[in-house]
Image (cartoon, rainbow, N blue to C red; front, side, top):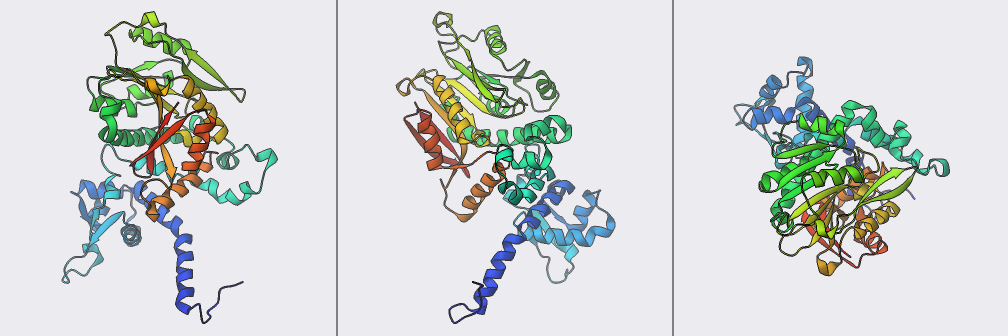
Length: 438
């Protein structure tokens, strides 16, 4: 039944309903306005001008802007200020021209400037390769059977995200940079909020398949006494060693396999107790576990009592499924940390991963636990912006057949994987820390 004005529905109610519909309909324009600002470098232009800038000052620094489009830039800035990306302060009445409006950075746009900018991550989200698949969402939802295992992304591009990373160097480079920036940003907050309990007292850390080393670099800066290394494929290490900001982190080229990991750790004289480290790799659409074991007699007393290793569980070499196995000096506990990647997998695969994690850690009374950094839809602040962001991210990650989960979703896979309990810590905004106990 169509909505029309009645005694119970005023004309104002109709207009409000239309406004709500329009607001959602035009939301993509706000995203594209932000993408344009990133492509043009508007935030950096304001930042490099001392934090505030008039339109002519922005134009003088955005050298790629065509002079005939300056009036259009003014309209773009009007959208971005209305969206809260930039601030705008009007000059006194004697300066009525729009050119005299002074634009500034908000907390959101401050994240888009500087050497640790999240601009690459934001650009990745808004990249046409990630946006265009959603034009076919309805078509994808109408197909099953032959296409049921293909993701929305794969239907649009004929390749998985990981395959596209390999075949499109420009996109792959953006993906890698986005991951390292987000990893560093998140790790910095984790270090501030709970770093002392996770990393304090460690003497060494090997980040296996650690990519360009974003997490390792953050840990190295916060805990200079921890010797941080990154082990990854040769072509990844080649990029990492030529990238800025890698100071304090050693990069080691090798394959993600049992023998390589074992040789690297033994070469550095890192002696471990008996423990199986599980590395999951894709082979003929099945997952096989490769275990590395250290003999109890190999561990030297008082040597490397506090040590950590990061283990990647990979579907593809480019995938970022990051795990850290930590041994605390005082209580001899081990922690396996899964960082911001479980959402890439469906329930069945997550259960397999968690089962392998459970095999890799001791019982709870010996300090064993899995720490997951990911979203818990509905956890933490209950403001509408956070809830909407979480469910939008879920739809975004659905494009590659991943999922964001609410507490019930996490509880299901945690218990089906054989764990006994869990705790959710809401200290990461839209994301959470989930401690899972065997």
